[in-house]
Image (cartoon, rainbow, N blue to C red; front, side, top):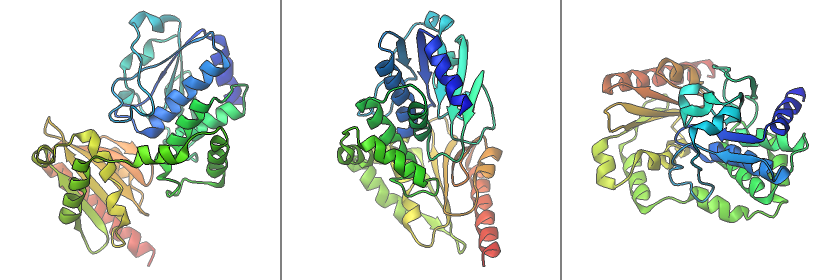
Length: 317
């Protein structure tokens, strides 16, 4: 693809490259960001390559961030991976570089950057980075392969979600050929604390499901304090309602210290990303995030989930 050669040309051109990802990173954010950084270091050992973006929130087994001074950006190529819109970029210095590239698999609602490569059919940004490496003169290292495999596994739910394609599986198989310990990596990604395990029981006990499969649960500040967990820990709980056969689409409403609710939305069929956009969020058709200013807006979001489930069932009956 021509755009891949454009990106590779910019990587060759710049001596200093700074790579960002989104706030509150998941395995795909870190996998694509640091997987790309590792491939560039492996291919061009004399270049300066930095990964930045603040805390990695329990994913230290994948990678950690670096701290750099502001003036490093003046002559740098900046690449942002897995981030649909600019407010979500972790470390807002990203826009102070000399040239900006966006690489992402979310809907391109904000086409920022001097080059933006967006592929919504990709399972993950990590899959895209693997394609960039395979289709240009970048070289894959074992650690890059480990990170990219983790990103693909994370965003496909271990190849469960609909975005998993035959190409995704071929890329994953090729990454395994680099000798990574996939079993260990899967365990590390899946592992949860005992506190989160206990909260899983609370979630199942307090999950509300209507007759059309619309479900929700509130995780209040008081509950999270009682169970000794943080907002970052709750990401492990988001897929849980999906294993219930009666559940079609759901929201996990996590109260933040400031009083608003972070809303994690998932679906087995109804498209939910337009709903998320109405409430200060966005994402994929079946996996999105939003924010609710208060309990009233949270209830409005649940009512919209109910309407989506009702309409979906009627149209597929």
